[in-house]
Image (tube, rainbow over all chains, first blue to last red; front, side, top):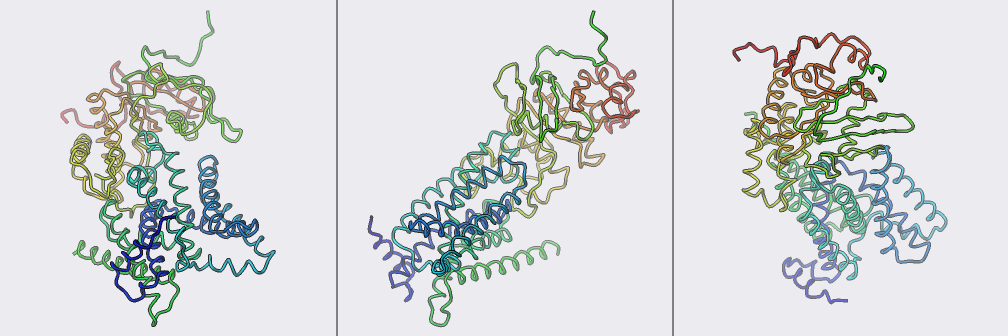
Length: 289
Length: 271
């Protein structure tokens, strides 16, 4: 496995804060810097195409994924993303091939996943403690191997975004229209669902099941308030997401705060959202004046 | 000699689309029942029929959005022509920041929109907007467009495809009287200019009689097919709509153009 020490040293140099001198903090920061741009870019699609419920369902399948790993004594860090990927693709297959509305399809998957996870965990009380880690998230325990996986995912994801951002917008607006105008809808939808599932699973490790949707949605929602075009929305979402991750991690490590990292990151992003609302209403007043 | 057939059959020479025994069933209910019809090359063909007649279903089968039995052939081959599609309406999040320019370029530009729109595409979209007389909308957000403006932008998007076949789903729905007049005339002049085949679904007989050169009357089956003056007879209309329409006087229609109650026909002669 390649040594990531130079990368951590670079982060410590770029962000010369006391709290970032510890290696686990440098690892956490690296993980967040890889995860937050992906969450921002995915969040744009999730917000514009009202897929929040989809990402919620995948994040809740984390329980079942972890439970499966514990049941078969496989590392939950592997079973969780693998299971999330299966759920994401499963929902997409059912959505494309059944006449049920997408809400209903996702709702069925959602409850099945949660029930399955709870059923397995309820057999063994000691498992419940392990699951808490996934409920609240814990970016501070991220390993080098996980960071490497994130790095690979980041490269794949960014390639996909560069190649398909425009077509994804098209499909999100109206799949029939996109299909008629020669966009390969099915392929895009499956790749999108697969990548979204993997990102959600990594985000579960960072901010927990309860806050994962917020990590996707809040930066994109703030960007939507400020942006005047789909192009600029991307950059705004990126700015909000990355700055929230950096500020959130640093604040959570301060003696006066000592808060959970995931929750702090989301709180910072929510502050951005409030600022964006103010900008939006100011702009509206200027327009009407 | 064959028995008199009440349904006038029409066999055009060159067909842009030929539906052969197209059947669609959903949950055991037949929506389209062995539909066989043709869309002549270069024509403006209208599919008319009451609600639930399967008009939109036939379009969706054509666009390969739903599965069907039977065959749909293009230009008497299996090669699908370039299609420009104008949906009835686009349900999307109106607060979404997407400008008309971005909307028109996103299907063509390889570079992601966050790096801006290339100057080549800017010109292309501007030309398309000029064709539908909507240049002023380029910088607007699509969520801020009115029904009629959105329809024109959707038409511009379809024209950007340089279509051989333009498909419109209920082009007169949700547009006011004046808007419809302008849109109808625009469609006519664009068809003459770009020489594509136009296929539209409509329940608005007034629009059909004025603009269509070929009509397919549909009510789960093909009730009649042919030029408007031959197909839109009292008998056919009563058969498919289940009541006397009283809208079209087929005997008063000259060979080349129908006289109808469409808004375009109500203008003063000097206009």
